[in-house]
Image (cartoon, rainbow, N blue to C red; front, side, top):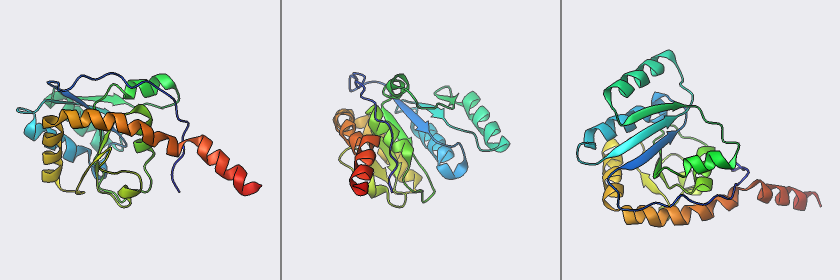
Length: 196
């Protein structure tokens, strides 16, 4: 069953494309199997030619992961760990809306990731690995998909997104429409209908 959330009606932050640097956000638990280190290494391999900033939000899974993130923050000026963010207000979703792209590089099978819905609400397209059942929530119409665990495909996806920023703008406009399908209002109507 899908996740349902309170859907805030926000105004997408106006973005001008093409731009010289894209702001990426990772919003998940910080651990190897969530794909964060693959993402960091992939960005590092192309960031001389393509310019990306990466902000990381999420609970750090272990002391080992904490050391790794500190190391990468010192090594790469384009990377910043921002801590945890609890999305409970319109203002917080507006903050998410300032990003150009949400990246979900998970290596897990996953279920129905609520974080993707958060970015539907914020109006930010997602670049996701092809986790199990990804096609139940994402389509290439408003999102970007690459083969799970394939860093070369991740690298090529990031390059293509950077080189085709008008497509990114189009997907920003489309992604807003996806949020309503996961609104708590929809769930409440369904429950009431079933009880009557």
